[in-house]
Length: 131
Length: 131
DNA sequence: ATGCATTCAATGCACAAGCATTTAATGCGT
DNA sequence: ACGCATTAAATGCTTGTGCATTGAATGCAT
Image (tube, rainbow over all chains, first blue to last red; front, side, top):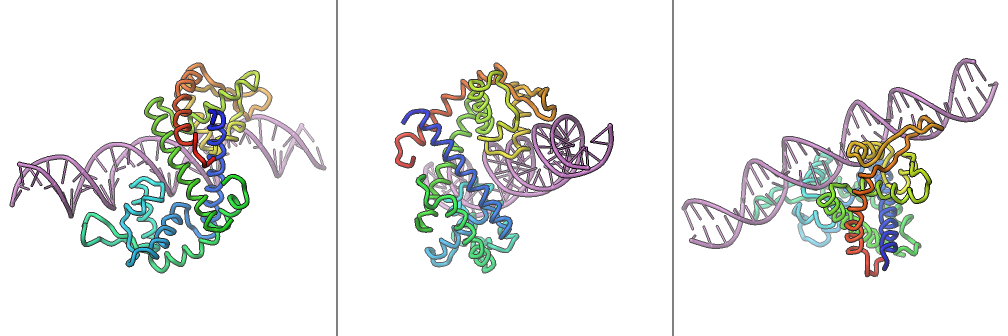
């Protein structure tokens, strides 16, 4: 792969990412009052509920998959809590840690927003040769 | 393409983008005191010099290719000017417009940073099946 | 048990981004 | 020539982000 190929690959990746994020941001915000990152976190929580019995997550576990710094994630969760979509609770075995759990309102909001996200992603990614 | 395929495509795109930007940001900042967007703008200017005879750019022309809002780009150029890497000058034919030109210092800084950018991009993008 | 390095999450702070607005210049219609 | 919608770029304001630090809890070594 030549440097020029690497560069054009990077520019295409970057452009696609920007276009998708911009669309997602607008659609999720307008229709469901959710930012992209907020939705992403709710999404991880919903997925995780199926796996872990109690549906509880350490903040740290959420960091993987959401590409945010620890501090940004901390504040994002605080916002979600203020909006009533998650609860934060101390965990007994390691009292430094914090468990994050979805509320019913959070589950509802996520399920409302999910089709919007899927639609936007499909519009950008389905049936293209870009992989 | 199923929804699940779309979703995993999106997550991979997103993860790759985040990883590359994060690396670029760190390397360009540590080694050359340049942000990713700052470098990107310098890069467009350098490329453009080869094309347009006078090497002048309307701010608007730079917007294409750099995925930033108009206001963000305006302030970014102000930062570059303060750092001595570009000059802003009125253009005679349309006095609303602003021409942006590279300074020697800007050209030098860009040429120093270019190998760093190429190295990071190659590390992430060369010789992978992800296209 | 005590001290010390380590880890988790929250917070102070500085900065960059977007939206909406503003200021200035242009051009078009009458 | 005059008014009016439009465009270019800058700016006020709010918000989200990262870095560095803090505070609390843990665990490990002595």
